[in-house]
Image (tube, rainbow over all chains, first blue to last red; front, side, top):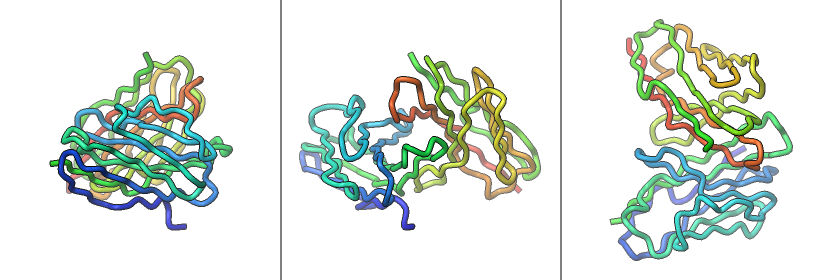
Length: 115
Length: 111
């Protein structure tokens, strides 16, 4: 089991550019989560999907952020246009939510720097 | 408003010096409380899930307990490799599968 795979690991981009973060969840997991982590605010949930359907996107900061899950094995988080305040570590996590005791498995994250 | 608060923010221990980390929560209804460990540059790693007051879980030098208002993560005779940030998170009734995290306790264990 390769775990949750995120790419890229690091991204440096200029303000105004489009950024796409990618995630491959663990096979068989039916929920996928996008979190953002900063020193000031800790881990914040941006959006999550159940069975590829967006369920709660109340954490998405603004319309510049969008997320898709076209199939059970792939999700993207897009920021367009990017701003310096978007600099953070973005984590993807997945879970098999029919197992009550199951933890959420996190990827290694994408460190985004917008200059 | 649902809240999760962890204390202390940072803790420095000598190797072998046992201690506890606290996670207090104010939520409308608790479905589960999760503990995670996070090492620098990595994603959080799942440790335990607790569901009801009085429940306890153990793993090596770690023991998690739960009351109706808070959870403790007890670390017995810690070693330097236990140094990490420990995060607690809650699943709330009516919150779907949304996991809400505290801000963590940064633990450093020194020789």
